[in-house]
Image 1 (cartoon, one colour):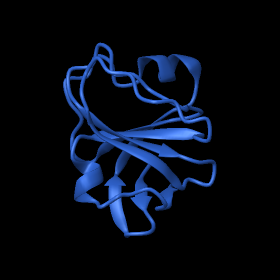
Image 2 (tube, helix red, strand yellow):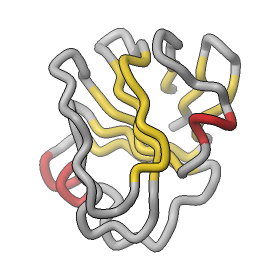
Image 3 (tube, rainbow, N blue to C red):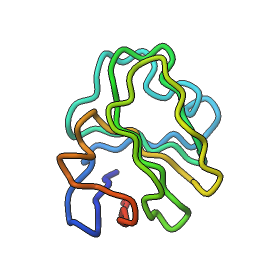
Length: 113
């Protein structure tokens, strides 16, 4: 799958993995040493994440049901807990720096296909 910022026409991930069941959501990116620049994880449903046990920082994009960017967290370090957004329906976990590189911001729309 892919994730593209429709507002800015910037690609967020060309290799997007979906975590849409309990085991996949629980494992997430644990055990990985890094995320390559074109990779990402789409967690759904999800309103908040943690980075406990991770080895690298990530960017976190909170999405509404319509896939509008509700909030972003840049360079979330390992062993942290994100805020929980009750309006979030899913979350994109991306390599650190991807949000800034693609100018992704609150209010943008993300196309996932």
